[in-house]
Length: 252
Ligand code: NDP
Ligand code: 8X3
Image (spheres, rainbow, N blue to C red):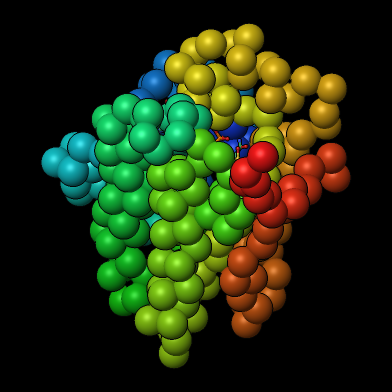
């Protein structure tokens, strides 16, 4: 039977690349994001647009999320694979200088919205005793860096919540996976630097970052292993990235 994949944040980056990959494999897709124009362009570029349902949705809007999910067309309403991908970093200032609204937006999007979407579809998965939830976290959830404060903390939440889900779902056939990518060139930095393309480009200058397609391949792969195998967690960096040494502030 054709499986249905729901991807939040499918208008660019990992989400759009994952949509292309799942579409090429013949899955039915529910693609969500705020930029519906991008979703529509993506939809018509995919092999079988009738198998794709798109909706303009801000995942931080709780009423809109419920309305959207309650009104999914019947053939798209049972979600087999949920890719909780919508997310963002805003700013890279130290915690004392940051804009509090940016922190709130990251918490609302990366944590609260991920919980909302998961909580909506999980009971159906449990009732059917089948499903796969894939949460996109980040290396920033495990490895702190200056200015990563709240962004990293939201992704640490995603990592730990995924483990909690796995514990709760023991005894069911539902799989739960957390993927923590490192530096990947998508719209991520343009968003983080509030549309300052020069600043965003500097992040990737003279480096070979991960691509959206690299992560999409991994997202699809974790769903393709035998049904009794659960990939709990994957941390992925480009070869050109690694941790820095611990630092010490010394007096003269
Ligand atoms: P992009 O900025 O290219 O994609 C982010 C996606 O999230 C877009 O489709 C955007 O759609 C969507 N989104 C953001 N806010 C909302 C919202 N409120 N409602 C609905 N959709 C929303 O970045 P990436 O593809 O890189 O990011 C995808 C995920 O991967 C994020 O969770 C990010 O934190 C994570 N990540 C990224 C890394 C990187 O280096 N690129 C590394 C590690 C993790 P729209 O604006 O149309 O709503
Ligand atoms: C994105 C990776 O290192 O910019 O989650 O935080 S990083």
